[in-house]
Amino acid sequence: MRADIHPKYAEAEVTCSCGSVFKTQSTGGDMHIELCNECHPFFTGRQKLVDTGGRVERFRRRYEGTELKSSAKAKAEAADEVVAEEPAEEVVAEEPADADVTEEAAETTDEA
Image: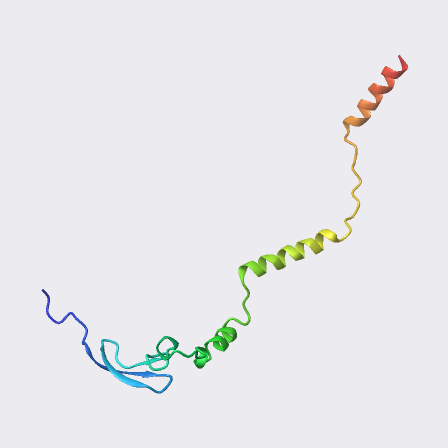
């Protein structure tokens, strides 16, 4: 077994957003958490607004300018429908060069 390959496991202080502080051991150092056993609804029996840190607002600000792929697809389809509704220019079909020959052949058979 190799020596000195494990991280240091030291005492860490955990601070909750409700103000509760307790000590534990960790390799990561001090921590700040949002819920603990003193404020979590499961342990207290009362409901608490979990968005105390403004996470929902932070999420909305972060993704404010972006749109979902499905909504972008819907907008593209709506734009295609608008383009399809515009009146199209009338295209006059040109007769193929063989059409004259076919008409002449039809006239000769009618005369006979």
